[in-house]
Amino acid sequence: MLDYGYESMSNPADKIEPSEHAPKSARYINRQGNSDPAVGELPRIGSRPSDKELANLVRSLGPAVSRFRPWRPGWLVTIGGLIIAVEIGAAIGIYFADGTTWRKLFGIGTTTTERTSRLDLPNSPAQVNSPAGVPIASTSPPPTGAASAAGSSIPSTGPQSTNGAPQAPGVSIATVAPRSPGGAPPVSGVSTVTTGAAPSGGMPARVASVGGANESASTIRGVTNSEVRFGISAPFTGAAKELGNQMRLGIETAFDLANDADGINGRQVKLVVADDGYEPTRTMDTMKQLFEKQQVFGFVGNVGTPTAVVALPYALEHHALFFGAFTGADLLRRDPPDRYVFNYRASYAEETDAVVRYLVKMRHLRPDQIAVFAQHDAFGDAGFAGVAKAMRALRGDDSAILRLDYERNTVDVDNAVAGLRAHKTPIKAVVMVAAYRAAAKFIEKTRDLYPSMIYTNVSFVGSTALASELMLLGPRYANGVIVTQVVPAVDGYSSAILKYKTALAKYFPGEAPDYVSLEGYVDGTLLLEGLKRAGPKPDTETLVDALENLRNFDIGLGAPISFSQSDHQGSHKIWGTQLDDHGHYQPIDLE
Image (cartoon, rainbow, N blue to C red; front, top):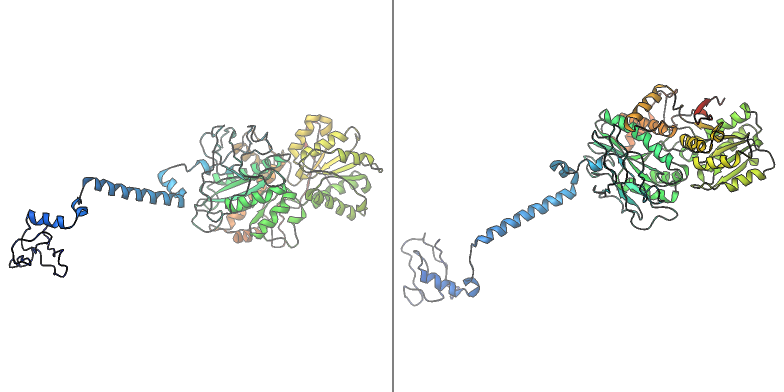
């Protein structure tokens, strides 16, 4: 035991005397001059205190001190446990602050949410067969393993952005398991959960969750050391779902092809998809989720004109890239062009002008013998405006054009058929500005009434889906139907077509080439070329600058692609195709 020098508790004025290390002459003397300390007093120690002296000291300090045991063995265990608990708590805090880094450090779950699913939608009753259900997948370079198991329910586990907006009501988040490039079957049975009330006027929007969204070495939205994320808002449920499916498939094909070649400037390129159901009332939710929650770099391949009416102002307000939308509407083709909006495809005005001229000059129809069957929204308005402009150029009376409408996301064409039958001037051709199901239904209900009617469609119709619908009715419904295209024939042998079909077969075995997916593939290819030219540290402004300097870029489409500061539309070319009685498209000359 150490020897201590204490002063008397009964006399605080006494000074502390030296300990045993003091000179040996130092001796204890109490107030009474005795050599032994009294009870309640401490000795001034010049030598080791006796047991009696220590007992007196302890009794003088009271019962609380008397019970004190300085070093019990259990205390070491308690203190050690507290230290371990603090370290574990700190590790958990760091994990949630930078979850992906720690998951990679410990090898935990780094692939499930960072891989892609097949395009195909699941067939569970709560999804495709339900108006509210469809899982939306984040996409990435394909893994080399087997496909993920069907029927699994995968919740979102990726950390949300710290600066993102709160989740919109009715928006469901889901992630999906990996897709194999070597012929694995599509992911199916992946369930999603919808929370909150659905957006007014439509079904809830659905958005994919991307794991590791916070892992970034820079402050550029959607760009990390290892990846660049783009988003697409399109229909994956409803009457126009095949348009969204095919557009997504084409973009993924281009992305996968680049990712297999070590990506773009060392980064993998991923696509995050959101289902807006082709309803403008759901589009704002999907745009916010993609940009604010999923932190995408920009948007590519959004489908539709009525949805673009909502999506485009949001993108422009946030200075976000809006590239390659699947629409030919003029609102995306301003003069001069909006800085952040780029289009590959020709406009509806160019498509309808080409087909009206074909009908008048090649088929020798009068302008008043041409009617327009159009969707009753901004899409139909854009197509009708293109026909009217073409009529004026041909010195026809655009005010006398018969317009036959139907409502979006329906196949109710009875009023349109009734309007056609009631029209006094015989109609010999109908320019259709419609989605594939409504177009097929209109042809079905009018073919027998007008056997020699010429039906033409703009490219948005979805050529493959239209052919399938018509062939189900019978060859006579398909034969002779014209569709204008903004890409070459998919059964051709040009360099671009062959490369597209080879990549499609590799990454999506069993999927047939399609005009919409080909357009998505071209969109993806052009976007990636711009991203490559933007350099290793891209942001939106450098990417826009790179795209505006893309000149005479030849990917084998028959005409090179160019952008400039004054022209953000890469192609102005129209191809004509016509269905035969086997449901195959044959090229036709529109001039």
